[in-house]
Each structure stands twice: as structure tokens, then as C-alpha cells.
Amino acid sequence: MTQLKKRTVALIVLLAFALCSLCACSQSKEVKFGTGNSEGMYYQFGSLLADESQNEAEVPTITVETTAGSSANLRLLSQGFLDMAIVQADTLNDAYNGTGFFSNSGAYTGYSAVAGVYTEACQITVPADSPIESIEDLAGKTVSLGERESGVLQNALQVLDAYNLQESDFTPEYLSFSESAQAMKEGKIDAAFITAAIPTPAVTNLADSIGVRVLSIDPFAVNVLTKRHSYYTPCTIPANTYAGQSEAAQTVGVRAVVVARNDMPEDQVKGIMQLLFNGQIPFAEKLKSSMQPTLEEATEGVPIAFHPGAAAYYADNDITVDVMNSSDEGKSVSGGQDD
Image 1 (cartoon, rainbow, N blue to C red):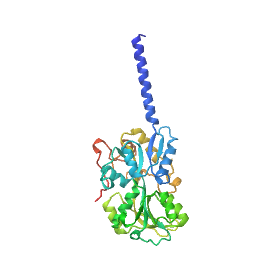
Image 2 (tube, rainbow, N blue to C red):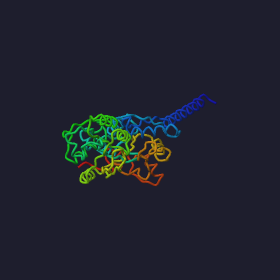
Image 3 (tube, rainbow, N blue to C red):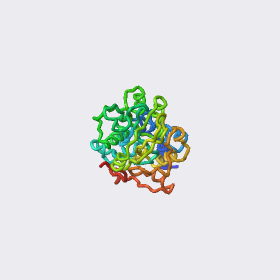
Image 4 (tube, rainbow, N blue to C red):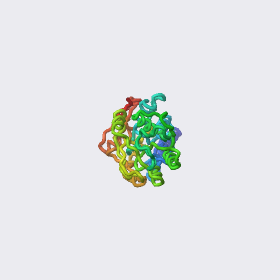
């Protein structure tokens, strides 16, 4: 073999090795998954997903990242600090379009939808023995509105606005679910807004300690909210969901949506779709809640277009969705807009 041929063969071997290494890196890449506070449902959902990813050779390893919630997740996704996240559909819509809370900061883009995984109920919680009977009674009280940069805060302000109430009408606190529960137990707050799948562990634990009630949103306000923001749907929290809650509560709910950066490889997204919908993770059983993803509801209430990897998975299951491409950036395919 001539020297030139030897060099050519060596170069081919090196190139092949490099390509194999790149492929291996692509498959083994660690996926940073944004959730929320470590006591919240997003974190628990992400942790179950991450645990199962360790057992699947063809699925990238998921690392759970704690954040302040939906708004923070979308900001971190757009800045490249996260690969995937779980967020509220309402916050997703506004962040992507630069509306609502994001009118001043501008739109956060660079990501697309993977799946709607469950419905979150807006729960306005008070102690069982509280004199507060309606949302109007919150005026002059100390109320937790959720953490800053969370979807809960946006829900709280939108619900209050439907009653012509503002933050200045009471003493606001910006607490996580667990912080809200502890503060209510200690008598430091009178009420707390919590948007999560039901039953919510933080509320369950609080109810087992002091008993709670969930305030209803009256039909007029529900109508106002669903007309102003089409991502809201009427929702019922059944009686006895929590200790002390003897009556059903009428409220609104939003979808929790998994999203991914647009530059995330399609095979990785498709692999994570398998984790979500192959039935191997008993989310509802493990989390003692209603948060079991189903393929039949995966595209409902999702306000932006889907990642190509997710679209490919849906196509394999005879479901057609709008696919994100470069011309879609900055435009919502569906979903509500603020009035």
C-alpha cells in the first residue's frame, strides 16, 4: 500500500470515529428540564420523567432543574440555559407572543411545544374556619399570589381583575406552594392562590393539619376569564378533595405543557414522547393526582406549534399538528390573546 493510500485510509478511519463519537454524544446528551419549586408538582412530574430516563438506553438522560416556575422556565429556555421545561399554557401563550405580563419585556421565543400533559386547577385556598366566603372578601386581607415569575401569579392577577380587584386592595405575598401552606398554618396569610393538578400535595398536607376550603369563582367571572383568555376552561374541584372542603368549588383550569428548544434533536424529543405516553410511568398513582398524560388530550389547549420531533411521534399515531419552523417564530398558531 502506497503512503498516499495509507494516509487516505487513516483519514477515513478518523472521520468515521469522529462521526460515531458525535452520534454517541447526541444520544447521551444530558437534557436540562426546567420545573419549579422543589415542593411543587412540576418538580415531582419532572423527577419521575428523569428517573425513568435513566432506564431507557435510547432516551437522553434528563436532569431536573428547579426554577421559579413557568415564566422563569420560558426565559431560561429562550436564553439557552434549559433544553426542555414544563409550563402553564397561559404563560406560554403570552411569553411567546409578547402579550400580557410580557408586554414590556418582549416575546421569549426559540422553543416549541411537545405535549399538553394534564390540566391545572386554579385553587383559591383559605383555612376551613376562615370568615372569607368569596373572592370579594379577600379585600384588605393578606394573600399569597404565588412566586414571582410563576404562572400562578399571572392566574391570580387575572382572576382578581375579573372582580375588579388589584394588588393594592390587599397585602400581597409572593410565596411557593409549601411556603404558602406553612404561612397559612401559622396564621401569617389569609388565603393563597395555587394553580396545580388536584389534589395538590401542599394543599393536602395543609388540609390534614388545619382543614381548608377552596373558594369558587362565580359564573360571571368564569365567563369573563374564558372570554378574555381562551386557554382557560371551566373546572370543578370535587367536594372532599381536601379535608375540610365539604362543597365542590367552581374554578378555571389551564393545561400544563412540555416545551423544548427548537434546536433540540428530533430523535431526543421523540424519545421523551415515548416516556410520556408509553404508560410505563404511573404519574397519577405516584403523585396521587389527576396528572396522567394521555395521547388523546396531548394537543388540547396548546397555544403554539409543535417541535418536529413531537410532530413525528404524533404522525406515527395518526395525529396531525402544526409544526414549528423558522417562519413561525414570534407567531402563535392558536390560543387566547388578552383583550
